[in-house]
Amino acid sequence: MELIKHLQEELGISVILITHDLGIIADMAHEVMIMYAGKVMETAGTRSIYYSPHHPYTSALLNSLPQSGQEGQRLPSIAGQPPSLINPPSGCPFHPRCAFTMPKCRTGSPPLRLVDTSVHRSACWLPADLTGSSAETDMRRHAASAAEGSSAPVAVADSPVTDPGKDEL
Ligand code: SF4
Image 1 (cartoon, helix red, strand yellow):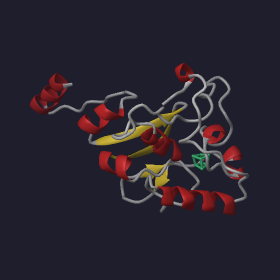
Image 2: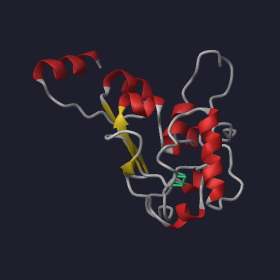
Image 3: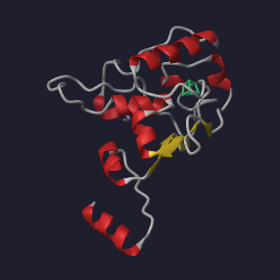
Image 4: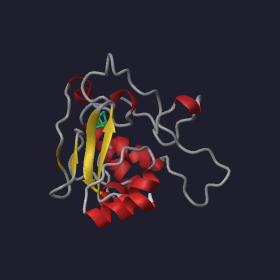
């Protein structure tokens, strides 16, 4: 990574990193694009992605990172399984695993639209001002989801891991 950084600075080139390692992203990237099932879910500057995520998939990824003080505990994972790319889910591709799924998520593919800044875009039907990873923001997401007629949401961050080898982070 140091060599890539050095070459990037010396040659003034752009570098595209494709990785699941959010630690490397935090250290290297200026802009981040979160993808799921081959589609862009969220794109923003690195600080916005880490501190003000809008898309539930981004939030779930961040929730799955190890935190200090959690030694000996299982890491949270995202409920369910990665989707089939041959027969992907209808509507929002994340809807079978999302804690905030609304009826329209199953039928309509959300556009990548601006949320809290001029370069922060998210492909999610939740209101644009619902950014962040706090419990309070999640409560507001649940309220917005319920107002749209969602059924009882499932917990994403606390779902037990039944087969860690098959879970996608
Ligand atoms: S709230 Fe709906 S549109 Fe947003 S990520 Fe969840 S399923 Fe997709």
